[in-house]
Image (tube, rainbow, N blue to C red; front, side, top):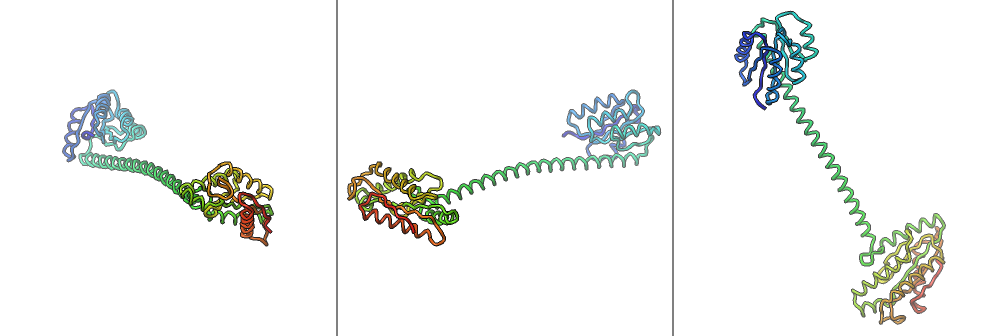
Length: 348
């Protein structure tokens, strides 16, 4: 910003020179005093100063001048620079002109001609003080608005980052929960998930009096398989068996779990004896079709599965453990009867 300017307008050169001299004597700070002898000249010069970047805190104008009168000039100045304070000099008690300047130009003060030096000095000092105070407040307000906008942007960004971080944490927790319930090798449910899900479904089936079935399968001669083909191949075999079980228990409510070692279980909610045996037979067929070589088996040159099936309609007199025991007993009978078969026992 260039130097500040006080603009003085009067059609009498003697008055302008006196006004300039008194203002220079009264003001200690670096302020340029510009003058004009008519309203038209003043308006053109004022516009030029604004375009050059000068700060114009104050204009002092006579009222009675040839051509453009003081109140009209100040109205134009107000339109160009609303913050510039306006003082009008008048040699007549022309209150109508003062009222017009107040209404149309935001007149700050009027001073009667001839003026008292002290009155002029105090009025100008007060006007400059008011102008710079208001300018300072406006700048501070602008800074506050800018800071507020920056704060809003930061808050919005922070809120978005918090939301993203929360979503990431929720996703991570879901992943951890999923991993906590999965068997790391076969990617089916682990024993922990099996126990919790069976307890949950048992309670629901007690309430609804619906059949609940459990399939328990054991890979035949799996220890021999590991000894013959190695644990890497043994792990691959377990994965393929788990996939065969998943392929046959595809309803959303069905749960395939690795019960332990080479044992797998399938929980079949709302499934009766016939439905459970059908799923078990499908599992057995799929495993046979895999044709996983097993030269150490006594029942087949390929990997086979012995399966026990149990079904019950849960009630308050039974427990989920009884269903497990019955399925385990059916699995035992399947092994005793030659393996690679499905045996069903009703849970009582």
